[in-house]
Each structure stands twice: as C-alpha cells, then as structure tokens.
Image (cartoon, rainbow over the protein chains, first blue to last red):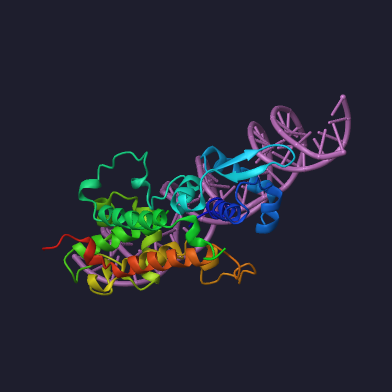
Length: 135
Length: 135
DNA sequence: CTATTTACCTACCATGTCAATAGGTAAATA
DNA sequence: TATTTACCTATTGACATGGTAGGTAAATAG
C-alpha cells in the first residue's frame, strides 16, 4: 500500500499545478484546500524540496512553487521519492543484498516482471494526466 | 510492499505444485526446502487452509496437498488472501468508508487505474506460469 | 525597526503491523 | 503406545506510520 506520504505528496504537487503558475503558494492554503494537517504536510513538503521537485520561499508572499512545468513530472518519481522505493519486495530494492537463493528462486522473475510493469505505469503518467483537460 | 506472508505463501504453493501430485507433503519438508522457519510457516499455511487453497492431513504420512490443479490457481488470489487486500490505497479496499472528497479527487481515478492494472496482472498469472516449462 | 508571515527544523509519541517464537493440544498412523 | 503430523493461542521485539509540539530563520509590509 502507498502510504499517506506518497499520496499526500501527489496531491500537493497537483494542487500546485492547478494554481496560477509563477506564483508562490503558501502551505496554509494547500493544507486548507486538501484538508490535510498543515503540520504533517510540512514534513512531506520538506522532502519534496530536498528532491528538487518544488522550491520554497520564506516570508510574506512566500510559499512553494514547482521547479518544472507540470507535464515534466512523472507520478512515479514523486511516489518513489516519498516511499523510498517502488519495489514490491525487498530483493528488488536498490540496496538489496544479493540473495543466495536467487538462482533457483521460482518467484523472483515473476516479481521482477511485476516491478517492471508497475514502474512503467507510474513513470508513464505525468502530473497533467491527472488534471482536468481544459483550463 | 508485499509482506513475507504473501511471498512465502506463494513459495509454499509453488513447492507443493512441484511435488508429485496426489501425495501429502509435510510442512517440515517444505520449510527445509524453502529455508523458512517451520513455526512461521505454520501461520501462513493455516491461512491457506482456511482459504481452501490447500488441505491438511494429520498424523504419520500426513502433510499438505493442493485442492486444485496448479494451473487453476491465480497468483493474485493467493496474494490477496494473505495480504488482506491488493488495493494500493485505503479508499479502494472493499470495506472503505465512502470519501466525501471522492468527487473532486484528482488522484482517485489514477489510483483506480493503477489498481485495475495490478489486479489484471496478478490474476492473469497462474501458478504454472512461475514453474519451469517441461517436467 | 518592528510586527507579521512564511518556510524550515528537531524532537517526541501513540498505535499498529511485521516477522517471528514459545508452548502447547488434537488427530492419525505404525 | 509411541511417533509423527497438523493445528491452535499467546507473546514479543523491532520498526513504520501518521501524526503533534514547540521552536528558529528568513523575508516582507508597515
């Protein structure tokens, strides 16, 4: 299951994509629109900043803004960043120790195929694919 | 991430599918072959019995046996049984409370499409698809 | 220069799940 | 009767989840 971190992050990104571009959007407003605790969103948004997905600006008139155009974000990279990995099993994470049973494992090729399918799907979808068509 | 419950259950089912059909296979042997704690496997196997995937027989000469032919099991039903759900988000579980934000939710249709793709994949794969071709 | 607004940071916490282990009882066979 | 096997309940330690509390730093408006 995708945790709230990944799901909320996606909603924040979509919220930003729907605001007038080029202006900073205060987290307070995002929290209100999305009906998510602002305090909790802070930790999520911080991670998005670290991942160079969005940029923050302090002080009056500050807030957050997208670093790229909405169509340049794949849903997969946002979710992957927040969840730490998209791998369905530990054996397929980037830092997984080589498994001695891997050679004869009946399930490994299956999980690999599953992993590939999930990644292809999530990385093929862009932020704009989740937004209403006309502006 | 798929938990060990789902992954181990799949390995147990495949192990049974690879043994001579029609004979009861002791859990001790499965645990040894799969290198999984027999004690832990007990809880997994119990769930498989409850789900009518396998059948147990006590006493000497006892063990576990498949209820159907290997090609009649979808991987998805095994994993779904063990994990409780295949849904990627809580909103899409069978017992989910209706969400008041569902109508305007930008992400719900996306997660629904994701869910459908995952289910289609997992239910299209049969046990025999994970086994070596010739016997 | 002061007040306000905003981002940004560290620490903490309650709850639940995961992955087991411990220690049995019941059933079937040799 | 002894042995083998399934089957059952309870417990545990570690960790992740989904937050909250209470600040500091930066930027702007007045």
